Image 1 (cartoon, helix red, strand yellow):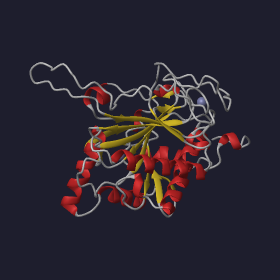
Image 2 (cartoon, protein in one colour):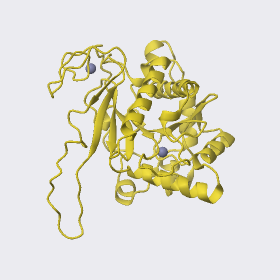
Image 3 (cartoon, helix red, strand yellow):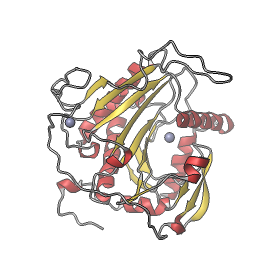
Image 4 (cartoon, protein in one colour):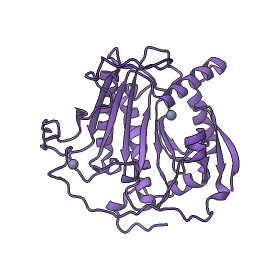
Length: 347
Ligand SMILES: [Zn+2]
Ligand SMILES: [Zn+2]
């Protein structure tokens, strides 16, 4: 059992790994899971093809992906510019930016992991276009692409989609990673994330999937039980500069991770997925290595990782599981999705 503190080099903070506590008695609430059988098309879904949205816009009858400006944007070109000046030291400014939604598929009942590898590669191309398009705007300093999946992370509509926030500020975790990477490059002449990949490959126990151009692993310093990073092997500041070959390799590894997630408990696996890409504020980010991070909120099929005193109040994570053990669990899962292989045996 692991009981130690591990340094998170990208966030420059300690993570307490206290895996000896993982079987402690639990009398708190648990998460109920019912597998719902969903239809391919839902008449009142605002993301399904041909349906009207609350804004009055009608979705096209799209065949693959569909991108539109969010009808309820948190940042917008139309955000109020006449603001009340706050008192004293306080500051405010207009919530400028662009918020978009990307539907992965016209089919309401699919998840990212159930898409074919080519369809995932196509989605990566859409992300490339979006990053290029949005980052070219002078007011956009960062393009943040993320997917919330599952009711436990607050998603009410299961139609497969992600969101893009192109903001006038750089999200905090990205800012920290960018600074950590810049400092490391200055001190060592090397890319921080490359040294993380090197350490992961030397150890090997936390690797989930790998091919010529991409790799997936639970990092040594993981904060969540099933926290998986997916990264290209070559350093790219964003998804936009991946070649077609790298895109293919990346989508293969990404699909494997998603299928293993769903197979783990034979249920759609909830997660928060974020693309970590270099800011687009004109700074020098060639030490930044694009990667996807998955932060799944569940520790067990029915048990949420509660964020409490250490995480919410103090800002450092307390992990009750060992990354080595959890990586082995995931690695052992089949690469065939359970919905397509009903006979596959569990455990
Ligand atoms: Zn739908
Ligand atoms: Zn990251």
